Image (cartoon, rainbow, N blue to C red; front, side, top):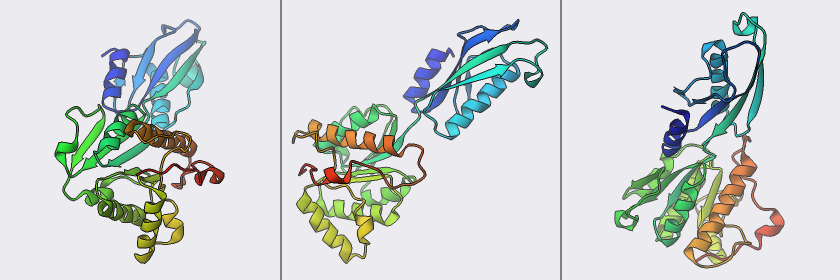
Length: 277
């Protein structure tokens, strides 16, 4: 498989990879500048000439994948005893991480806002699970890379998600929203939790959650209303853009941090959050 086809196939499957390119070649070696190789977690596509250099490039690429690196990287290799070569010279390789998912996002609810939001999230470097109990609410065409989950017991899906996930709750039922909120806060290992609704809904939920014994600092991690204040409007697509923007801001701010507590908009702007109904 060519490197171009490999990239397209890996992107379709939502699998991250690193594109390795020979940028510069000095010395009497058979390698050609511009040669490319795609490295995934368990496969290689194309070649940059084989040998120990290719092995070292593969090792670096897979270390980048394990670290979820997003930064491009240049490495210079002296061709000599360290690479098992009999001649001098040097090779410069460019490592470009591609398709690295920045977030695992669970969207609860296949209503109007959910149908506007999920295609936006699917176009980001994220893994998306779209969850609802009502199979007929999902559109016929599900965006590529989105895992549609139909489960009568929607709340049970919370425990199936990995630590550090992003939760977006926008179901058709306030009581279901409350039960999902309780399960998500009980885990308390999320990177982001947004609940659709107004400030009034937030106050009601905070009261009910305190009655259930949740600490105030845990409840404060809930984003309700959610979305970027500057993106205003009541249309589903406008609300969806606002939420997607906040998700992007969160994973960009949190990238590389070990803490699961999201850094969002400044405290001074939080009181300006728009009302969502």
